[in-house]
Image 1 (cartoon, rainbow, N blue to C red):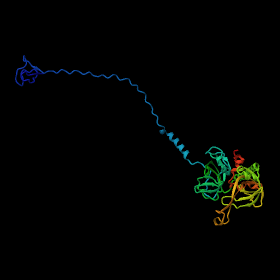
Image 2 (image 1 turned 60 degrees about the vertical axis):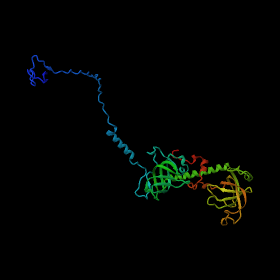
Image 3 (image 1 turned 45 degrees about the horizontal axis):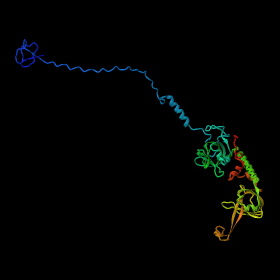
Image 4 (image 1 turned 90 degrees about the vertical axis):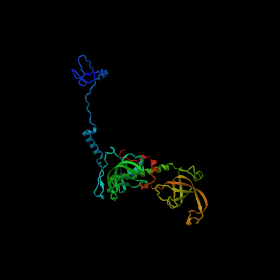
Length: 385
C-alpha cells in the first residue's frame, strides 16, 4: 500500500495526486511503502507416538445370582415346609378328658426321632439306677401320681424321686381317671428323672398287662436278691466273745458278727431313730440298734435268738437323777454316773420273714446294699437282652 510522501496520507491505487494535500505523486515521486512485519517463526508441533493396538476380547456373559433362579425359591419353600410342619405324635387327643387314651397296643420297633429301638425297662429299675440309662432311649410303663396344669406327668415316688414326662397336653390336667402311662423317651436327670422328647404310647385308667407282669417279675427279683444278700452276709459273719468285743471295740468296728442274745428290753421308736434294744450276750450287757430293712418280726423282752450284725464300738450310757430333767423327764437331767456298753448294728436275724422280702418294693430306701451284693446285672432287665 502507498502513502503520500508529504502528509503521509493513504493513496488510492494508481493515484496521480494526494487527495489530502494535493501533492503530485507517481512518476519519479517516491512513494512510502507500508512496512511488512516479518512472520513469526513457526513453533514445532508435537507428534504423539502411534497408539498401540488394542485387543478387543469377546463379550463375557454374566450369570444371574442363584437367588434370581426360580427353582432356588421352590427349593427354599419345600425345605421350610418340612422343618416347620407339625410332627406326628403317637399321642392321640380326646374331646372327653375323662376317657383314657390308648394310642398303641404294642411298642413300636423304631422311632423317627432316634431311629432306634427303645430299651424296655421297668420304671422302678429306671428310678433305682437312672445313671445307667442316662442318654439312652427307653420305653417304660409307670403309675401316675399327678398331672399338673401344663400337662407334665409325674410317676409315683420311689426312693425319694420320681419320673417326669412333659407331655404338653393340658387336657390331661387333674384327670383322675388317668392312672398309668407307657412312654418312650431319652433319659436325663436333674433332681427328677425325665424322659425327653417323649412319645406317649398309652395313658389310661388301668395298668397294661406288661406293667403288671413286670411288677411281679421285678418284685420276685428283688426278693431273690435280698435273700441272696442275706445269705452272703450271714456266711461272712464270725463268732466273737463278749470279752473281745468289750476289750477291742475299734478292732471289731464294722466287722460282721454272729451273736446269740437274750432280749431284756425294747425301747419305743423315737421321731428320728429306732428304739434301742437292750440285751445280754454271754452274760455281758449289749446295746442293739435295729438296722434291718424289714423290721419283722418285732423283738420283745424275753426273746432269745441269733442276730447277724456289725460292730458299733462302745455306747456311753448315762445314769441321771430322776426328776431333774425338763418337765420331769430325762432330757437335760443331772448325770450321776456313766458307763460304756458294747453296741452292735443288727442287720439280720435267724427269725427273718423271708417271704416278706419282696414286699414294699416301691418304698424301700435301702436297696443299694443288696444291689452291691448282687451286681447290677441281676436287677437290670432289658427286652433287648
